[in-house]
Length: 568
Image (cartoon, rainbow, N blue to C red; front, side):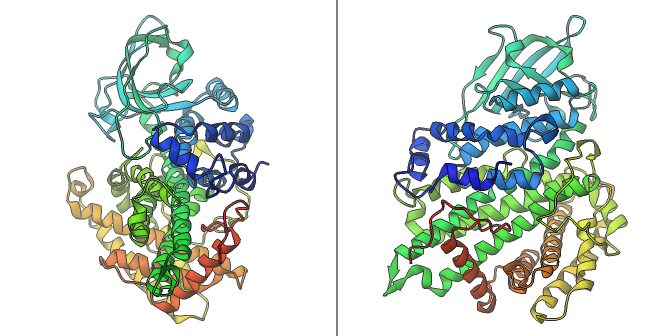
């Protein structure tokens, strides 16, 4: 099986100016506002598209968590490659795996495994994330035919793709059965029928082709429909559980590189006779950003594994990942930018990659689905989840927090349009009971979150129907944001408990999970407090160890053989 280690070796040391796939070449492509061509050729040789195809269809997709780790290697170097080469096809393909028939899935596998791209054609600027109001039409034509009419303004790889998954209106009736997704190959369209719209300028993802398409009564075979007519929303809500989990988790590679940039800067710059990186305030800030990465990875990796193990319950979790992980990453990069100072604005030189990564990361907060839209997805589910799950603790499935355990194949047919229960949050109560004796610093934050869960349950059960609708009481959305914080704390605590089977490792140490819960508690309280030195010290030491050894900063702590080590 092709590994992350192989991909890292193919891409090489990004900081080496002689590396044709390094930061210098990535920045040059960004200045030209072009996709990084040599990077795409390297990913062609690696066969990255196989990562988006299930093993049963001839690909290498064995687990969502494994796919995320692979894509982090790409996002770590160039988010434009991550989105423009890979993730855009991933977004489109999961709709076919979730809603397509045998022939459509077989054809998609053929396209991807031959190195071609598939575009997700969803968004219309007039309607944003409100897919129920999409105007692009697929009307009946001659028998066995649909006529496509309309425009989509923001499409990744509009001109470079071989096929498109188009979210289309197939009925004028109100409600959730008025749209259908279509799997359309460009070669099947009449010559000249497809018109391309110009790309909108952007500050981030400048190399990604974000153009549009326009069609006017273009005939296609009615067999292009993914599932029955009117099933688009159901297919989308099922596929979102993979994309809203996967994409933000992939972009944690950006935060990994941001940390490495500041660590290098801390070695290079001296102030008052010592390296900047030796200053306590800098070490604390780095420890906090590292903790934020671990927090985000705890939630995203747990949910990625839950998609396999608890597929009926992951709808709300996926939206929580999009809200929590993208927001935490953006804030952590902003804090790292403050440490770099003026270097964080430069577009050339050793640290020029930082400003590009920060610009490219910004769309993670609204691309594909806005963070507030994700909260709105979770909100109407809260009363049901509170009633069914939040009163008693539940034990996690054995493989959920064992990151080395194999997972069953992705069960696309078991994904639901709404979560049936909430075992992950309920596991907070079981974890609180199972805590071993030892460091009392952790018990206070744990009690803080169990008490918060009780308050959330009471508040959620008291929500009125009007509070759950769009345009309802804004305080209800705040309640949903607090819920995502408690959910995240539950995943951190349970992963730490699972790591007790490996005593002596960093993830088994209470320091990081105590720091994680303290930072999450600050979100609940609306405060921003620095980590105490007793926690920041060992966390920074672990960060420095990984940096010196060339290892990943996420939960995997995996070897990245061609990343640079500390120069001290």
